[in-house]
Length: 74
Image (cartoon, rainbow, N blue to C red):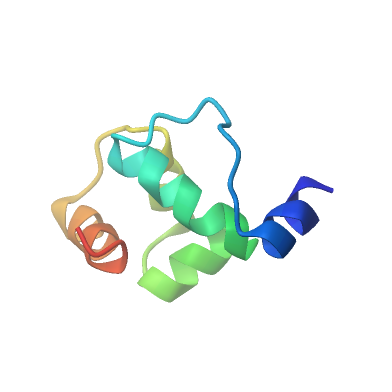
């Protein structure tokens, strides 16, 4: 139900996500578009587990980090 509300209003409610981190920003980016981690991995041409690691703020390869930052225009 929340996904439908976000799609309608364009507003993402606070979800306890730290948006100051790359992982938080990536999660907030994909949530309103209803992208799964797999969808995002295909778009970024990276492994789905890398998306999970980024969102959990774990260490990832620099190339994955750069691709994510490019997607988010950081």
